[in-house]
Image (cartoon, rainbow, N blue to C red; front, side, top):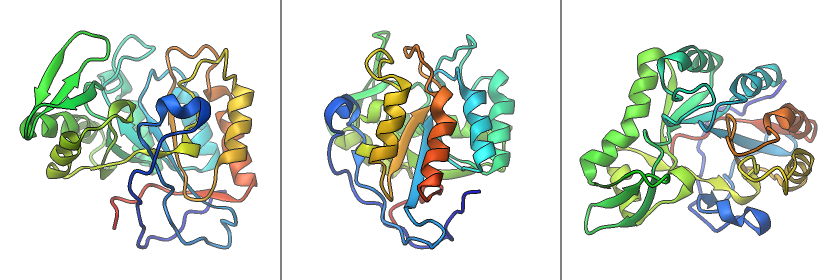
Length: 266
């Protein structure tokens, strides 16, 4: 059984660099580990698991492992296409998110459309681009607020009591100065992940098979890491969900506890 530390002051350090080696391509959101006091039962430290929506193919498998290992995660929501042929915040997923809320997971925004922020366009405006090349917009304050609050509103409609943190994560971890300012003005603090916390489930399984990713995470993860993964990634042929419970078990065996992210850098 995992033990979560009691609430208290937590320091969220600012963005601190890019992911190393093969993970560098996904280092845009990398940040320094969170500093937290260690508890005796958490002899190796405390980790913060975060899960982005993604393709959803292994969602039920991953959720079952979380429940068996009694791990609570912070779930970043976007309305992305899924393996079911719908979108992740559509009606067919209501029961899934309702169950996660009941289990005590926390939620945060990953934007509604999961487009990419690619640059600033004058004061108070940011370019927001469909990564599939099917559209682009310039968002101002109102547009950014709508993009960040819409996934939370969808969650509230199906799980009113869900724990929601005032955090957001930019798709791909790519931010701009204006995107960060506009989001902060709307009440959202940006949350990346740590370099060692990038679990690699977005990488090709041909070059990064599950056994390699599992061994790498167990060797690299340290106290305070913010771990990043998804409910399945469409392009990956060997689902990372197949070794996810092995990862949790291995980290717990090392003496790590899991905790929800702090609401902000307080």
